[in-house]
Image (tube, rainbow, N blue to C red; front, side, top):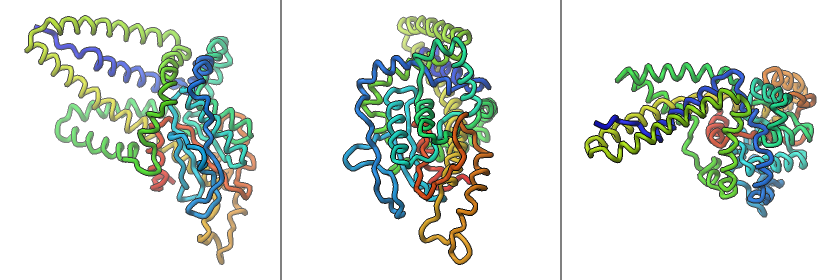
Length: 406
């Protein structure tokens, strides 16, 4: 009888999830080390993305404030979403990226520079934390880091470099990696407990996953990223570079452990291919049994990793990033025209700008070297700009627009 084999795709999915979970749960895992992979390759494929991302000009918003918005004469990249943060009346710009993609890197550089040249750039927030960022910088100072530097780059480092060139502060806005790792472990244990507890456990799993999905993956519509963001031809043309950078970034960060993991994956895929040959020689009944086993296995994979992805890697981190965006908005905030802000309607906010700034700085992690003194709107509207993976954008828009963080 044919031994039911979950075959290649489910096995690859499990291994991929395990690899991602392993690296994310490591306290010294550094997404920011993804800063420098394939710099040379990104330059070599720059031709598909050489067309400038001209995306800003002055216009008026519905709230009557002068703002930076897409030019009528140029098409704004579909990966950018802009909105007015309702608590502070500050314009927020989210740039959704495909990590390591040369198109995303170019778009980030040009967008940050455009706002900075127009003196509209407030703070830039990147999807990283102090642990990852600082570890990356340490590695880049080593011989191994110097070896990989010519072929390593990311949109986060590009945004930071461009903002600091214009002396604008850069915020490390993501949840700390050690906290994310702890949450992943706890959620994995809870998911195992729920899936092995029919009725009550399954109900709890469904309710929590549904709640997380509603927050992290809103249905979208106007003011949200849509399918055009992902299927942008310029993004897709450069996508192979992104796919090459992931394993190279892991290899650069932990060459020995990554090589062992890749060898293990290769061995399991080889064994899986032998199972595929046996499947072709099996009887119809054995083939049906094998397919059912594979479907069951795939279902368990989805159940486990859907909760990890949606609840921890998206919802939980979205809340932290949104909170950091809101904190920066408070620094640059100005009252609405019809809002009374003090006794007899007198605006007293200017007397408290300094204390407001200090409070925000005390709770915020900045890229080392960021200039944060005098960080306010200087009487002009400033834009708070965040560079994120596209998967985070709609959830963060949802959190901020609906005022779900303080």
